[in-house]
Length: 503
Image (tube, rainbow, N blue to C red; front, side, top):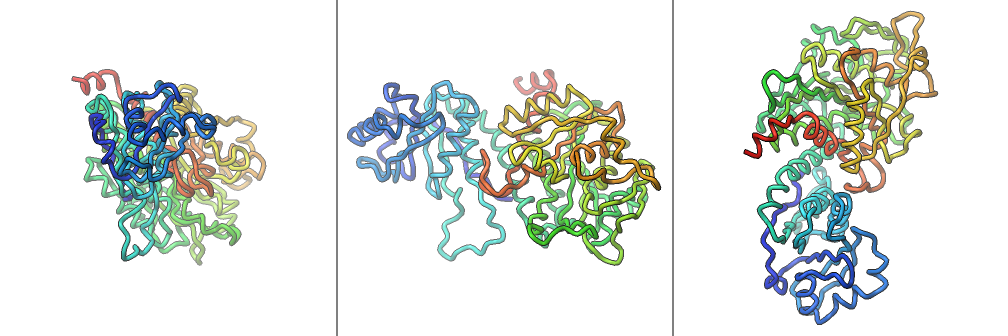
C-alpha cells in the first residue's frame, strides 16, 4: 500500500526557524495579525514576509490559499509558504490549506508553524491526502530519492500532545483512503479477483476477521445472479467477508457491501472501445469498503461493522451469460438479463441478500460504480444516494457533507419499479435508458428487507475522475472512506463506548 506522508506534532520552537530545511509554512489571518512565528521569520528575512503580506498577491487570497517566498535570505529553508487562514478556521478551510501546501511540497520536508490553530491536525490530513501518487507500476529511476510524499510533515504547535492525539484517527483515515486509491488505480491484470481477495486477507494483521467464499460455496448458497456475471472469465468469482468486532458482543453490525467488478467489458453487451481501459475502476465500491474496514481497524473503532464484497470479472467467452438468459438469485427470484453490461446489480443482489440472511444488520450501505446515468444527473461532484430509511440516509448525507465528500439524495418510487417488469421472469435487470440510476436502485431494493435500513451509493461519477478533486490528484479519489468512517463514529459507536475510551 502507498504509505501516507509522515505526520507529527512538536512543541513550537522559534529558535529553530533559521535552520529548518525544506519548506516552512506560516499561517496568517491578515497583515496586521501576525503570530510569534510569523514575526520571527519576518525578522530573519529582513521584512520580506511583511512586504508580501502588504501586497496585492496576499490581499487576493481566499482562506486556505497560499503564496510563497522562494529561497528567502536569512533562512536555510528553500521556501516560505504563507497561508491565509483565520485563527478560527473551519475544518474545510484547514484541510484546503493542507492540500495547497501538499501541491507545493514536492519531496521536501515541510514544517508548519501552526501555533494555536485549532484544526492543525486537519491541516496535516489535507497535506497527507493530497500528497499521493500511484507509482506501483512505474520503474523507479536509479537516482530516485523517493515519491513526492517522501519529506516528513511537522506541525509546530503550542500543545503537541493534543495534536498528536488528534492525528491518530486521521492517520488511520489517510491509510484507508490510500488503500482504496491503490486498489482502484491497479490495472486489471494485477488486481484480479484472486489477488484482490489476497489483499483483503492482509486485513487480518489489523484484527479483522476475513473469510473468502469460493465459487463452490457460492453455488451452494444459490448465488446464481452473482455467478452469472463471472461465467465468461477465467478468474474465479468470490465473495469476501470482513468482520470488525469492536463493539458490544450482542450489537448488530453495520453492513457495508461493495461491488467488485475487477474489469468490465460489458460482456456480450460490449462497451465501446474508447474509454474501456477505465473499467479497471469498476471495483470502486469494493475498494471503498476495503478502505473503510482498514480505517476502522487501524483506529480501533468501538463498533461492529461487517464488510462484504463481491469480486467478479465481466468477460466474454463461450460460457458467458447472454442477453435474454434467465438467472436465479440467492433470494429465489428469477432475473431476465436484458443487458449484460448491467452486471453490478446482479452482483450486489446476492451479496445484499446474503448480508441480511447471515448478519441481520442494524443498517446496510452498498457502494457501486453502478450507472453512467448518475454521471449525467450529478456529474463528478456528487454521489447519488438512494434509501428506504430517512434517518440512516440523513446520517450518511451529514457525514459526507462534514467530510467534504459530495452526495445528493435521489428518489425511489413504485412507478420506476414497474419498468423492471419481465414477461418471462420475476424481473428484468434494466428498465430502459430513462431514469437509469433510479431503476438500478429499484432493482437493488427488491433484495432489501423492508425492516432493514438501507442506503445505496452510486459512486460512478466520483470514484475515479479525470481532474483533481478537493483532496486528491487526478485519478482514484477514495471518495466515501472519510464519510463512512465518520458515520460509524457518529452513529454506531455508542456513548458508553466513547466514555470507555476517555477513561
